[in-house]
Image (cartoon, rainbow, N blue to C red):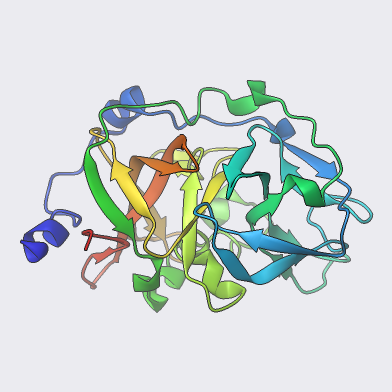
Length: 278
C-alpha cells in the first residue's frame, strides 16, 4: 500500500496542460507592494514554521534585502495565527551590502507580530492568489529532506531571462529545502504563486505564504499539478519540476497555495518531495 501511494506522487501520469491547472488554481503575478519595511522591536527575533516549530536559526535585522536601515521586509497581505499568536512572513532573499559584494542569504520564516512595530495589512495585492480550491482530500506529508544535490543544477530562469545578470540565484533548489541553508531544519514553502509558468518567467512570482516543516500534513487539491521546465546554467532544458495546489491547516485556519511535489533532472529518477502519511 505504501509503495503504491508513493508511486502516485511521481510522474507516471501525462503532463497536465497549463491552462487546465490555471483554471482550477491561481498562479498570477503579484504586485511589488506585497511587502512593507517594518521596524523590529528586538535585535534577535525567533523564527517559526507554520505548525509552530521553533527554527534552529533566527532573524536578525540590519542586512535586509530591499529595506533601508534597521528594518525587516514583511509580507503585508496576510497575518497568520501560530501557537495562538499573530505572526507574519518575513521575506528573506539575498542581501548585497554594496555593489559587487558577496551575497548574504537571509531566511524566509514566520515571525511574531509582538516582535515588530505595527504592520499595515492590505490583502488587495493578492491578485486572486491563495484562493480556496476544493475538494482537497488526499493527505500527504511534507518531505523536503528528500531533496538532493541534483536540484542545485536546475534553474527556473535562463540567461536570456536576465540579460547582463547572473542566473545563480534562480535555482529551483531555492524552493526545495531552503531551511537547510540556515540550520539543521528541513523546511519548504507554501507559495502564493510560482516563479514561472511553462511559457516564461512570472514577474513577482515565487512569493511565500507559509514555511512548512518536515512532516507537515498537506491536503492535495483535486486539480492538475503544474509541470514546469528547468534549465542548466546556459539555458538548455535539463529537467522538470512539479508543483501541486494544496490546503494546509494550522491554528484553526486553512491556507491554500502551491507546494513542490518533486523534480527530475535528465538522466535521473523522479525525486518526490511529498510522502504518504504514516
